[in-house]
Amino acid sequence: MKNISAVYPGSFDPPTNGHIDIIKRAAKIFSEVVVAVTHNCNKHHMFSLEERVDMMSRSVSEIKIVKVSSFSGLLVDYLDKTESFCIVRGLRALSDFEYEFQMALMNRKLKRDVETIFLVPDQEYTFLSSSTVREIASLGGDFKNFVPAPVYEKIIKIKGK
Ligand code: PNS
Image 1 (cartoon, rainbow, N blue to C red):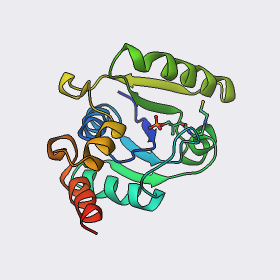
Image 2 (cartoon, helix red, strand yellow):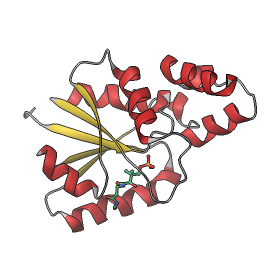
Image 3 (spheres, helix red, strand yellow):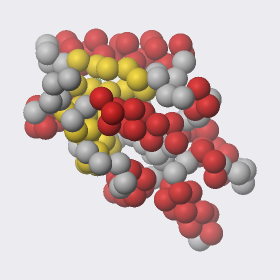
């Protein structure tokens, strides 16, 4: 395997165990994985960028070769800055495919040599998404098994206020 660095972009609002599963898989393949937290202009975020970076950093602190960062603007411009050409995205189900396929092709139109690598999480995360976690948490349900401990603690702290 070549010495390739990959960028795993997302809004991570909040990070879930499904995201961590993808990061661990990517860390087995690439020489460096940059988890790049950003704003998704199609979504209204519950947590600020700083909070999402902080939750993600705490959640992956023990995984070597993983760095957490943030960016604004186009992903392809961020790739230029990090001198990477490889994007990692998770595919949970067929329902993710259309959006991911469109994004992969558009990123390639914007920057010709960009490659998107899709990784499939463990099937126990097929049903899991940040939006489900936000909904369960806001309705008082038990979401402890769906998120890394630092994320759970952060949400519990907020709810207690
Ligand atoms: O976790 P998400 O919200 O599904 O991630 C989507 C994200 C943030 C990767 C996507 O919206 C993105 O790349 N945003 C940066 C702006 C950009 O480059 N948009 C064009 C994508 S084709």
